[in-house]
Image (cartoon, rainbow, N blue to C red; front, top):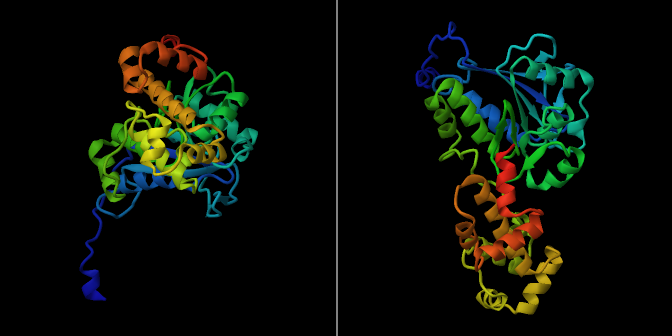
Length: 339
């Protein structure tokens, strides 16, 4: 035992170091464990030297209106260690969402605490469906917010005053920050740790978690029809993989079927069964989504974007874009820049 103990050096004395980053977490009933774990593990590794995991440079608390454990959607329970009260000793208040409608089930004490945090100039963060909670608290009116593609339609119907986007890793609109969840929480945590604690501490967390690099806020995280790539039908899965590789050079459906060693009829049948649409429609929408992302994140001309997305000319791109998004690419850019 003594030989084993000698391999581990005692941690350095850092008792007098004040934290550079203080975060309070509010967990919704049946919250999503993955984004919470990604975020808090990034903090843990950045918070101390080596792997001692003390809350030195970063400090966090699990906040709740009661002391009852909060169960994640997978069943793992987390116990709060900070009761919601008037004091707000945080730089960021992070609301971790999960199953719906549970993210809308917070009582007035919690919603008022979130509002009070924003009024006290504390940045408020919504992870996963935490965006629903922030919208329910009135913090996303006329604000851009990052929402998962699977929840966007429901979010728009419930909160028409908000401006959801599905092609962003995270969005910071006047210190109300939203992140669609999953592993994108790593990228948001990296950004916040870099800003408050320095890039070296943020990189320490990524390295410890075996993450090669972080994604910028404008990185395109979502894949339209991504669920089709794991739908169980080999024709559809392989076709979608080819479509995503050939955004600028689409094929005729007969050529696509030939590459997959199947018939055009079988390919159409498979797509209608699993996507409810023809493969040509799916491919066009995938390319339009890429065009939408390019309009948001680049200054490329509409003609260049049309070519990048495999449309024969700008007029075809404009016509199909307006058909799917109810405005022309130019109108979309003008509206978005005015927000």
